[in-house]
Image 1 (tube, rainbow, N blue to C red):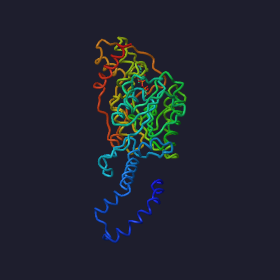
Image 2: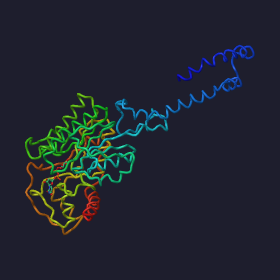
Image 3: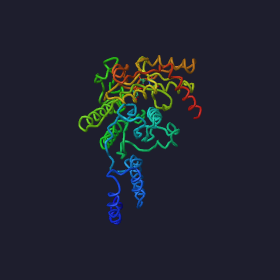
Image 4: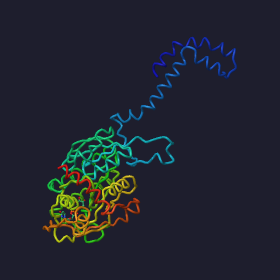
Length: 402
Ligand SMILES: O=c1ccn([C@@H]2O[C@H](COP(=O)(O)OP(=O)(O)O[C@H]3OC[C@@H](O)[C@H](O)[C@H]3O)[C@@H](O)[C@H]2O)c(=O)[nH]1
């Protein structure tokens, strides 16, 4: 622009010399031919084309320039999973820039399924995982995808990243000493990140917040029955604190948050040896070992297939409601009934073996999902008998590969 202005004085006398003649010989409104003549004289056409080129380059390059600029920390307040192009206010053909979603624990069982879904819908995903229980194999099929990044990092330490944050961490039993610290410090660090960059934050909480419930089935309004100093407290109290922190950052810090309370979930990619009941029974039956039933086996749980959970998490992120929402399958089974389903699915000759139960084990658990049905329009679709064979296929392959 400056160069164009600078060059104008050198041409000014020539332009002035032509002005009276054209005024005298032509009517006040110049016709098309005079415009053509005007443009062709003294390389004016060149300047017009140059101007058009600069303007169009600016608009074409603008999204890239903004995304590269370190000063572009403009809070992105649009929903994380935006279907904005479907709304009437957006011009047809316009596609919003894809989102960058951070999934902590994204190489884990649930996390990796969520990552599949996010990439499928066009988002870019940064997986942050410390690989304590997550496995590179779970996301290996994305390693060549330019919209996928994998970072080895423990969320207990702060991390500097940009754009949308989706917080998911699933930690297996066996790292009990780290539970509370990870739940609290990890949540705090990720909430800090979400606050700094104005991103939406999803906390994957758990049905464990209800403890050994005195209300059955459990509604989100139930405050729970938790032993604060018991062996499970590092997990259930850790998640309860994580919920508290999340609401605190929402109320005090204006962070846009969502909370899911996840009930027992199973499916392909579960850790073979995470100690959970479905993975234990399936792996034991496949290895022709007795299925270990803890206690009298009459305690109940409700088992949800992983694709149903992912659909619920997506609906929660896309929706306008903070939650908490119970995400689980209300189908309720005793552990003896579960053992029977596994037996029928894998091996009719499978046996069971009773073992002492762990302390404070909840006697029953079943989600009331009325709230999620009404507000998220979500409910699980896959029954235990439909979902279990899909998990067994994956487990059989991995056990064969051992
Ligand atoms: O081999 C086993 C393992 C477990 N069990 C029993 O199966 C029941 C379920 O135990 P799991 O360890 O699978 O799961 P829990 O219900 O204790 O916790 C689970 O609940 C909700 C999730 O958020 C948690 O991540 C998950 O650990 C318990 O009653 C347990 O005693 C067995 O009978 N045999």
